[in-house]
Length: 204
Image (spheres, rainbow, N blue to C red):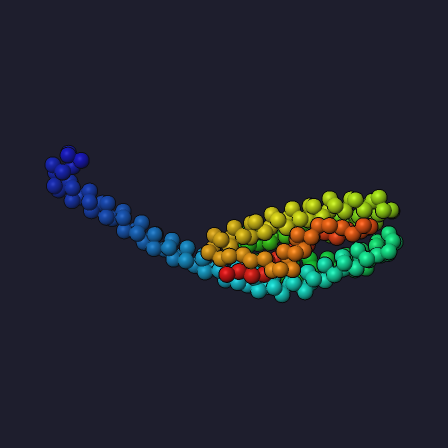
């Protein structure tokens, strides 16, 4: 620094050069700030649409829960298998179809929602195979593994979604039905239904 200050002309040249370099950087910062603001607006808009669509998906989710309730009241294995075929699997198909229409307008939200969709698609396939292979009461225990995997997938989804909401200064709230379904893990004496969850429907 002492050498630079000894030559005033050189100082002027150096300062001019620094300013010349700083101006484009300043413009880039303003542009980056604008892009950040646009990204935040896009994320907030995406969250609003996703939350609204999630609330609308509750009917399809309730149908899944009701179908398992009906299956759980079966009197024997034959009735239970028929309820899985005629009630549970069609209800799951409808819910999965609804999940596929959910608006996910940011890459992060698309990835997070994909975890929930994958969890239900996997569970649907596993329940299909479970029903076909079920031959007696002893086979019912296998359902616990299906339920556990679905719960793990739903939990991963919820944690990721909550983090995404928080990163965008929004608070994720569980609707009562979704929370209750996720907490319910006890099977009936002869049958079992998985804990299920909708996409989360409320944000603040």
